[in-house]
Length: 78
Image (cartoon, rainbow, N blue to C red):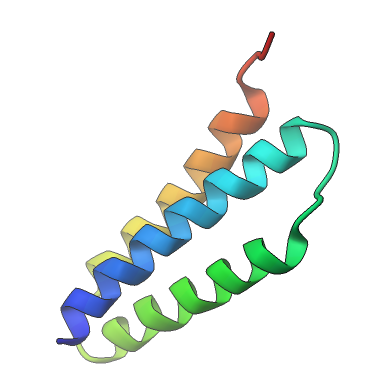
């Protein structure tokens, strides 16, 4: 069960990273509470899975969130 929740957390981290990147690309963060909530919940779920022996969701979620936010920040928008 912890492994499945870890993957849910990884998905939340990916969504939060993409959301932060999209917000920053538009020139400012307008919904910081939503991004912080998704990030906190995702990190909590992946950290719990990590502590129970499922380390891949934490690594995948953290790297994916950074990658998604960087991609959205540095992608040219018209």
